Image 1 (cartoon, rainbow, N blue to C red):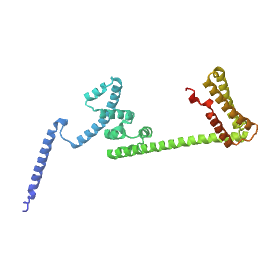
Image 2 (cartoon, one colour):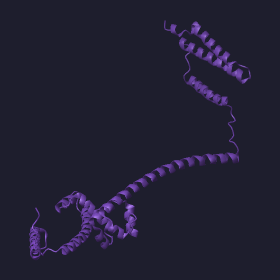
Image 3 (cartoon, one colour):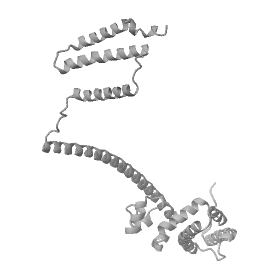
Length: 302
């Protein structure tokens, strides 16, 4: 079923009626938003300009609020700052953001800060410290100038900040690995330097003189020191030869010493001594002593 065509003469009246209905509907909707309006008639352009002004003022207010919170945090007793934040309707996360914005952007060009807006400033404070420093020094932020920074969307700015953070972390890891490698290399160079210095001294002075004393003479010194200590002990604590047990111990000790002294005398006087034969003779000597009834110490208590 086709719609009935409206006569051309009736079109202006029909259009006027529809426009009137639309106007009434918009007026009713606007009146319902009275709590958020300024009481003036609806004007799209006026509200666009008002939004821009609000956003610009919000940026400046955020920076000033951050400055105020920094002073409060430093001046009030510990724990009271959180109560103040809650009293004015802030949460701690937002307060930290405002303070960081104030720290970073308080000396920033107000006009540029207004053009960027709070959302972008929030994104920018997460950037590496070097990027913030670059922005303050030469106006470049992650390679972007002022115009590009203003034109870029907040979402794309956030992505670039994340990429810059990731790159900074990667660079730090590379620097750490490089530092560790340099430390190991330095240690090796120190060792090589010490070795080369020793080789240089040896080349200039010749090989260090060998110990003029033969190894056996060093052993002789230790042995004579032990004998001297033993002799000193005997002077202060001589065996009681009237005691049968001590007399037998003394005779055993002397025969063992005499046996070893005979061996030493033959060696020092260039008399050939077979070490195997010497060991065998020592065992036989001890076997003879062990069979001698005078040295059967187990029977002394009988």
